[in-house]
Length: 355
Ligand code: NAD
Ligand code: TYD
Image 1 (spheres, helix red, strand yellow):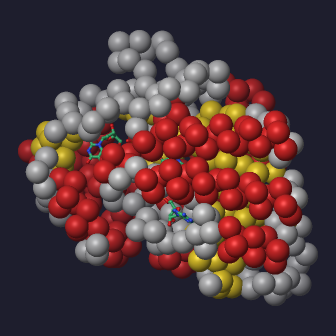
Image 2: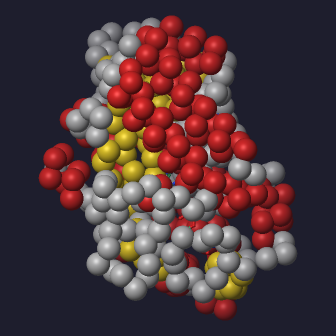
């Protein structure tokens, strides 16, 4: 099923680039669709998303009437459906965001991660081989590098850091990265890969740390911190990530990997305390719960390569980004209340019930 226009822009403008964005009904993909339609009014964006629990048409509602946008409800593992879209659109660029993305769910049920994250990547690249493409971009994660110890703040992930995964999620993403590199070397597919640190911002599904804590705090529910809350993540405002990908697909070197992150390391517990303070909620809501299995201690990106080669630097400081994000969740209660009042309740009971 596809919604939206299937031809030239209604205003008669010439479309100079067609980009397929997979996973555009999710958090980062959705932000990327919004970003690209604004940054490049002469581009046509075709979103492929099968709307898993994490896909949300409310995220795309503001762009559904945009004549340069088309939504196709397609599973990226469905070869025939994917090839049909390529046959109709002949895209210039593909940006593959579609994935199962939550570590806790990958511990509960790894199979679907292998299917979407690895086989889905293969199907997308096979379509690119058949129909020809200027660029296939794989959106990967810093989690493929494993983790860093807390007592070595001098260490960072570079693009040369060996792959060393911890969770079924990160293993599936690393497998996909290897497949992307193999398609470049074996078939000459013009690929790039980006490995980003933790994102935050609008439209973030409330199973992830920051939106979960905001939603729970607003509902005066316990704030479940895993272990001692000392794990460190390197946070990046989602718009900075979108801008980095925009640069890579236009100016990045084919065959290269780019790390994206901006020296914004924070302990989980400190983030939860910031959220309590911003919402004027008591820290007594914080509840320490059983740790995640195989929990990575610290992620930290060295962004030197993307800075030197493409001039990218993050623009949003964590102190500002977190306040903007909290404001967005206050102003868009309906968006996340629809989620937490739906089937998400079963997941929450399963994941946190006996923790
Ligand atoms: P998300 O879970 O919010 O969204 C994933 C989207 O993909 C959803 O819209 C879902 O419906 C869609 N999808 C899932 N399986 C699909 C399939 N088989 N076919 C078509 N669509 C499918 O994820 P996100 O947080 O936006 O992450 C997007 C990408 O960025 C992922 O590849 C993830 O690994 C990567 N990444 C995320 C982060 C982060 O902090 N969220 C950091 C680094 C990298
Ligand atoms: P998450 O948002 O799931 O991202 P990732 O595991 O991919 O980094 O989790 C971020 C950190 O927050 C991670 O160290 C696990 C922790 N965490 C909690 O302490 N409580 C929670 O309820 C969740 C979802 C995460």
